[in-house]
Length: 368
Image 1: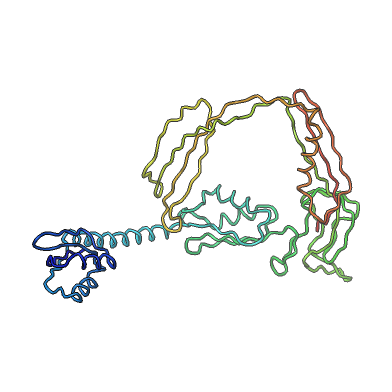
Image 2: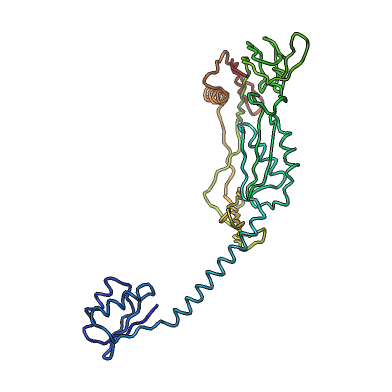
């Protein structure tokens, strides 16, 4: 910031012109002179303007406080850069992201369960990750035939292959058998390649082999092949709904107590400790990261919601049609557009204090 001192003649006009173009402030007029201040960025242009309007005897001097402030600002920038560099170096020893690649239609949740069991999440130290051990655990998940894990930068990259339908070659010359993922009854088979393990009319369970990954020629020689077939079966789908004559439900009052904790690399920096005085409450805890691509600073939120227990009574006979339809809709969630429903039925089972509605579908669908 700079301070200008000019002679008091015709100052109203020049101050108006300067104020229209620049940030001019702290204007003080006395009998001897007129003073005003401006920011560094406007200094040169204000000097040119004053000279243009014939002012030659003005004084321009820096405000000492600003100079000191600028020194602190520069030092702050340097310190900030150093601090961020240190944090960046620290964060380079952690993973900040987990990336799963490949066919993960059915197994993604299972993979995350393995990671959680090994305490692997964002900002886990790279040195704590046993890649070979995790690969072996993931290979034990059903339908996974291949897994590769690498650490690249701050990312843990997991590449997998599933053998759900075995339409891809996993390794040249090594093929997995084609297995059933349903409990069903085979209704038609069209073998493309491989050796059949089932016939039309067979009842199979989940995990049973449908087609073996080899063929045998007329000389009795066995050759490994990718098992392929078009197999259609009657699949049995059921869903159940339990209805109690009376049950206790939670009614939330809307009152909530919110606490949070800020931590850095496991060290608590700040937290709130508001007292929870509710006689009954439900707790919720979740974590958010600040600058999660660089700084492992996290906020853990802990919320407490007040509720009371309310007894709810149901009239099963009056709402029977609604319960049956609800159970049917749940069963239909497992049906695809090209599946054919061959049969459907429901059973009501009455017990002491509750009732069970079971809905069954027989669906003809392609399973391989």
